[in-house]
Length: 315
Length: 57
Image 1 (cartoon, rainbow over the protein chains, first blue to last red):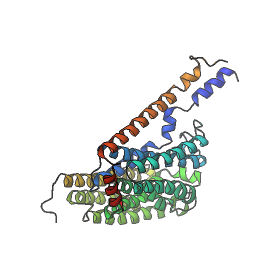
Image 2: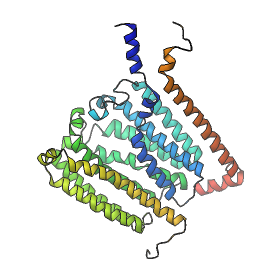
Image 3: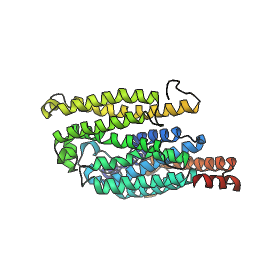
Image 4: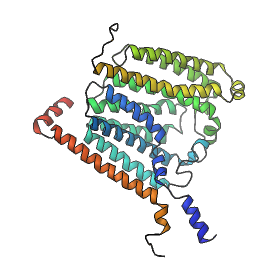
């Protein structure tokens, strides 16, 4: 091998800034940013716009840092799964040690700066979220139990609580309801993904429900959790976190979501393979809209209340 | 091998260096902005600090 070919190889594998940014899982970050923003803006305490911007930025960085630590720990299974093979570590562009250093540095940075910008309750919640995602979910539950998604989902459910705490300095019924909504939404969302990305989890040996309990059982679990989620989501509509607009959105979307879960439950593997898991894919896409629409409705309800709008017929 | 200004290492790491540079500039702006907002709001004046302490407890 000549020097020139060595140089070319190293050039192709040279980490660019985008590779380091990819460690922060930017797509997951969108969900974190959006739900945290709703938590912050829905809170009854107004926050200075620049402090609100910084709070959301630090929460996003904290979420990204936990993503980097997740990639550092899971590099071995990421290399096996098709969906994750091109991530910076398995593709060889970023070393595991670099990811660890970036993850730890950004974790400390985000927690300290959130504490300084807002309050230490929010910072404490962010620190706990990072700990929960990295240690409890990634290091412990993910490779040990098929309930990994259920319990680990709590990590993704904390951002609205952190946003709320950043504004109010505390925790309340509304922020807990927002937490519960994301928490209950996570299992059907990921199990639908596991149904149509099945070889990935099988190959990596991750004990997803599809691997340990079978695909029939996973379909039952999706339906059961969707029913529980629908009850929670619609009940939230009659609490202080909801309102008529939220309730309308919740009723419509939960009806669609229940229909999707019902269709998944009724199908068997032959039917799913015949149309390349069309129903499961549709349910997964709907789950994204579901969460954004629910949180969007909470945000609009809070904004209307802030501007003094009262639904005349709503007691 | 001398590390001149034209060395290919600079080309290779251009995006990384620009990214790190911009990140540092943004960090400075954020720290400056936060300090400005907190000082002009009077967060560090004794009366307001005491009120905030009382609210958070």
